[in-house]
Amino acid sequence: MHPYYEKKEKKLQKKYQQMNRWASEVLQQYYGKNIINIIMDEVTQETNSIIKRLPYIGGNENAYTPIIEINGWFIGFYNVTKKYGFIPEAAAYINGKVFKRYCEQLPKILWYPLKKLAFSQLMKNYFNNQAKKSQERLYPEDFVYTFNVDSVTGGYTFVFSSCAVHKHYEAEGANELKQFCNFADPIYSTMFNLGCNADYSFATGYKKCILSFDEGRKTKLPDNITAMIEEGKEFLQHHQLPHSHHKT
Image (spheres, helix red, strand yellow):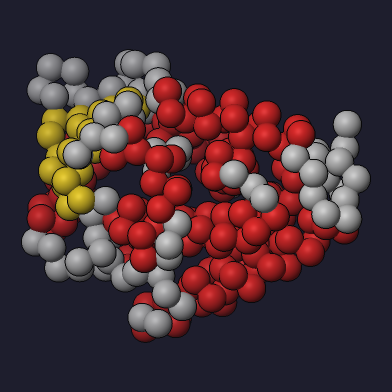
C-alpha cells in the first residue's frame, strides 16, 4: 500500500461508503433491501481491500488521481455483483448513476463558474503542464497523453496513448470493464456544459483515446455508452437475485 493511500485510507473508506449508499438507492428500484444490504456489505469488504492496491500516479500532483480512486470503487462493486449474476453493462449502468451523484455534490451555484474556468487560459496551462509530466512516464501505471488547444474555437483535445484506467482494470482482473472506460466523460460534460466528444476511445476499440472539448458544443453520448445504458437497464428489470423478491 502506497504511503499516499495509507494517509487517505479512512477518507477513501468514507467516500466509498457514500458511493455504496447511492448504489443501494439504484438497486432498491429493482430488489429488496435485505439482499441489497448483503451485497453492499460484500462491496465494502472488497473496496476496502482494493484501497490497499490502488495504483499511485502522483497523488495530489496528478489531476487524474480521483479517477483512479473512483474506479477502485467501481471495480469492487463489479467484482461483487458479478458473483450475483450481474453482467458488466448492469454494473456500469449503476456506476454511471453513482458517478453522477458524486459530481452533483458540487453546489449548482458553482457549475457555471466551473465551466468558465475549464476553458480559461489558466486551466489550459494547467492541463498542458499535466500532459508534459505524463510524458515523463514517472509512474508506470499513469496515463500518457498530449494536450492541444484549437486556436480558432478555444476548445482543446487530450490524446491518450496509454490509459491508467485500463491498466487498473487489468491489474484487478476486470478486463470486462474496459469497454466502458469512457462512461464518466459524457456525465460531467453534460452537467457542466463542456461539449465533450468521447467517441474515439480505447473503450470503442481504437489504439488511442481522443477526448475533445468545445465550449459551444453539445455533449455527445458515445454509442457504446448508449448501448450499455439500454442493456444495463433491461438486465436489471428482469434479473432475479437469490432470496429476493424482484420489484415490479
